[in-house]
Image (cartoon, rainbow, N blue to C red; front, side, top):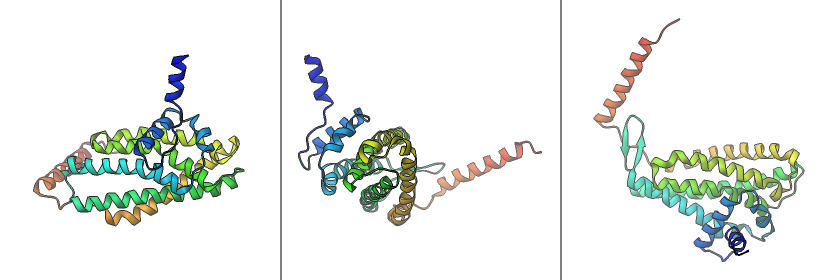
Length: 240
């Protein structure tokens, strides 16, 4: 009995305590450990848009952004066949802040779209419920973003992205009321909308990205070597 009590306490949904990073991390762990069953508890909570952001989105998103910033400052940015460089501190800081704000804006825009789509696919959701779905489903993305602290682990972020999609899939019906037979169509509509919104925001924020330095002699030599290798490969390739 004691073991069961400890187990249930470990996986329970933590109670909100305002702007509290420790609570936000506990909530993230709860969602990551319970991607199927967490949604019933999350749906029952009364949270406003501002509460969802201040209690969770700002904290988890901020941690991921800070990790990425530190990783770039410590390890630099690697450009294939050219080398690595450390971007300027101030421009990288501005870029990080802009990307963070862009991410928060995208979450809200996608929640707004999801609310509208829910009605079209026989569901019924408030903006708060839709925001919960998008924001909490992105928990794995936030966790993957923390890998930016060690950029060489960044390819593993793809695993976290797929887990985020799985978490989203589990939360569609509980959070929006979309029936099972409409679930795939709704998810695809939201997914495509996310791509479009992401491309628009990426185009807007591209101006704030730190610029790569002009290639030096060694970098140019590396590119020339790659070009020569490709030419030799083309000559060796059989022709029809």
